[in-house]
Length: 354
Image (cartoon, rainbow, N blue to C red; front, side):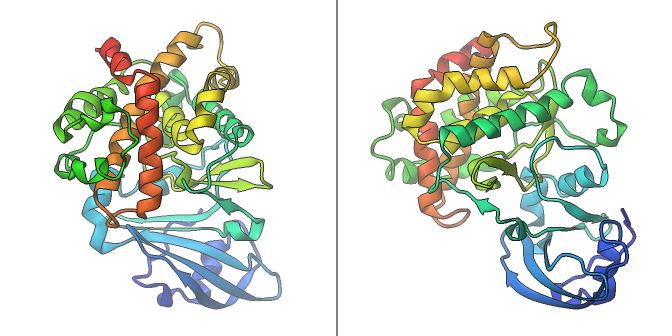
């Protein structure tokens, strides 16, 4: 994969010659003659869909591009990691899950910038999901098995066998969320269980979230997606779950990905009805030797504790109104993690971790 292309400061600066070079590894012989910005969707990163025209050998009709946004660099460095996603795809290591194909990943550390050119998932008919459109149990089962394949591939000593991932940081807590106005979120969640409604922001951060995050550096370490909530998923053919936005890739305990995905991807009722079976699906799909395979009880206990992460992130997000996320999405997820916190006695699971 060519890594010496300059990173354009604006999408309008992407020339046909630049895009031809960016696509050369995956589409040799394709010569781009025109690049059109068909959609721009900037958030914490700069993002756009680019339409492409060719002379002779064709390539993709469109691509999706993603780069750092100068206005949000400090936030990205604090919570995500500026270069984790491009480094992951520069490594060339297999990710045994459905994910967008990345044609080129560029990093410019001097300018604190990165750029990814990846497939436009719309060309494959992908169906992006969010909390307002939860998964079915069967769809969630596919996602659970995918995460198990990822975790099992890089479980324990297997992770250390890949020097290409030596940069991978442990999942550790970050500062800043303690300023969230938690009562603003709780006022919008009248049906939240008492154990959640009684929380202060100090208790949420210091007694629930940070102890759980600290536990992620103990036990077998693996490659984590790190941000596997439903808003970073899509469906192919209505059945296969894909994971996008790998910016929070980390090393740590499997429980973070599994719990964060499963507790938010299903309705509360479906999660209550199916989670035991889905935990068994995850354990079986790890495909680990018996000596390394966590017991069913260990899977259950780690999953119970993992609610701490989703609960904290989405209560804090919901407290911020429209600043970070659409309120209907943030409140739907906060409600699901709040219910799981009570259902699974997360406080008891965290106490057992200490």
